[in-house]
Length: 373
Image (cartoon, rainbow, N blue to C red; front, side, top):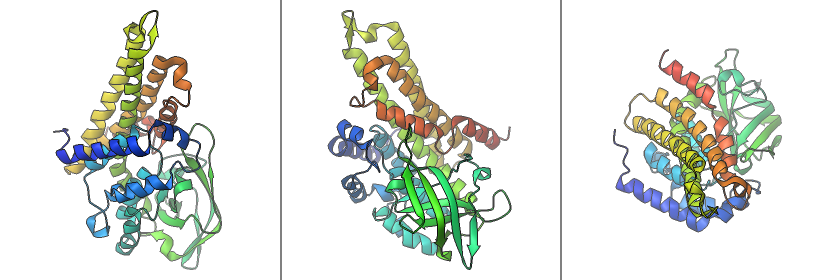
């Protein structure tokens, strides 16, 4: 296993770092926390022009068919911000879901617009009785002629306020896994999106009130949506882990610099053993997240069985980002809670990603299933 970055991947990382420094410095990241969508139009247009929104889209549909590791290198750099916005939701999970579930006609219609940034997808999965498995899906799509009618709610839908379309699993049969994926235009009558307050990052409630959908809203085949979504999530999760790695690296950089420059009792606080303990704890989490994420990516890119490694990577990355922020706050003390300093957006993002697409407990259980324990 060779995890060194190729020359092309180093260029991707350099371009992303330059983009963040120029378009989304710390002051911009902090200011975005108070916006409705977390994404100024200019940033999205620039990302589309750079080809970032279609990296996982095949060339036949207007993308560049990059490797998973290529995309992860980009997302690690974005996580250093952490840059919010539907980059992962639309360009990674949304694109993969359309590829796994959609018909050929749907792929040709949706993916070029997604890669060009003209459409923005988000996945609305969880409901009031939250679970990341099919048993947590209770929203039923009632049949009306050849189409469907939706009445219900999805909770904690990331980037729904920035999306033009929402993909949601709904119950269309009696069996636990008899779920279908529906593609809903956010501007349609009866669709209401409300950003949720609290310690979450740009997540929303999406409420459906008598939303009438035609047969074309069905993504792929009826009752086969969950299997397609699982395949998409398995490929998308290591990219999300790389974003968390970028976050871990950023809070380490902040903490190390602060420990070297903050003077107390006449010496840098990094001289104190307890501060060193927190930084070492942070490094351990950072390294664990990095190597488990990139091992899973390597397996996906080389066609090796990756399921157990993907679940391990998500469990480790969720805990790592969460605990890295805890350690960083211990190093910084009061200044770390200042919104202008830049640590708080990472803390908020780490709490969001801890649960998103499954918390560590969920993925450890899935890893055990994959290993047939």
